[in-house]
Length: 372
Image 1: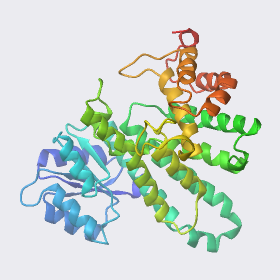
Image 2 (image 1 turned 90 degrees about the horizontal axis):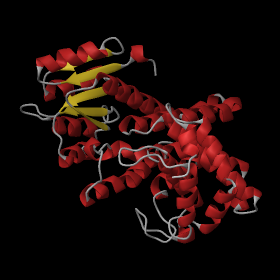
Image 3 (image 1 turned 60 degrees about the vertical axis):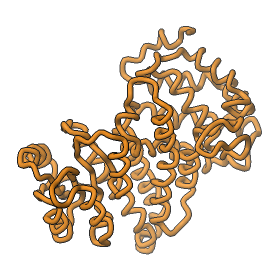
C-alpha cells in the first residue's frame, strides 16, 4: 500500500492531541480530524479513511461506542481502528478488542511505535483484501497463478509477522531462526523415514512459510502483560494463554475471506493454535496429548522452545546451545514427542548453525558455545 495515498482519521476531543498526532502523521499520510464521535462517524462514511486512530475518553459518545457503530455499518466495518488512550486496566483493553479494535496504544504516544503499528495494520488490511480478490485475479491472469499466490502468501506472512513483532520484544531474526529450525527438523524426519506421507517438499515449504505466524495472537495481549519484566500472575498467565486462540481466530478470518483451500494457512492455523500443547497433555489451549497434537505444532514446539532458551529475556539470561539441547532432551516424553527429540539430537548442530547465522545484534558466539 502506497503510504502517500493512505488516509488516517484522527478522533480526539483534545486539541493538543489532535495537533500532535497530525504533526506526526502528515509527513507519511493524509490526515483528517474529528473532535467528537458523531463527526467521526460522518467522516468515516464520506471520506472512507484507511485507518482510524480513536480516543476512548470523549463526551457524549465514547470511543467504544464509536467503534461499535463503525463495525455495524457495512460501509465502514472493514476500516481498522486503533485505540489511543491512557486507560491501562486489562478489562479496558479487552473491551476495546471485543468491540472490534485491531490494536491498543497507550498514551503518552511513542512516535516510532505509532507509525510502525499504523503501517503494519495498513499492510495487513491490503494483504487480506488481495487474498479476498484472489479468484478474480486468477480469472484474468491464469498463467501467473502460482507466482501471484506465492506473492500474496508472502505479503500476508510479512504483514502478520511484523504485526506480532511490534507487540513483542522478539526480533525479526527470531522469526527467521524458528522457520529454519522447523524446516531442517522436517527434512531430517523425512530423511530418517518418519512421517513421509505428511512431509512432502510442498508440505515442508508450507511449514517454513507458516512458522513466522506462530505468535500472531500476541497482538491481542495487553502490553502490561506481554511486556511485563517479571513473572506473570496466574490471572495474567491465563490472559497470555489466549494468544493461541487469538492467533487461530485471526488466521481463520483470513481463510474465510478466500474461496479456495490454502494449505499454508491451514498449517499456520495448526501452528498458531497448538504450538503450546505438550506431548503429555499438560499444555494449552486444549490439553491435547500425543498424536492428537498436529505434527506441525509438535515440531514448532521444539523450534520455539530452543530459540527461547538460547535467547536473552527480561526474566532470564541466554542459555548455551548445550544447555538448551539438554533441556529439550529432558523434555522428551513430557513436553516433546520422543521421536522428534531423537531426530533433533541427531541434527542439533544444524540448529546451532542457524542460531549463529541469524543471530541478534550483539550476539556473543563464544558465550553461546559455553556450557551453562
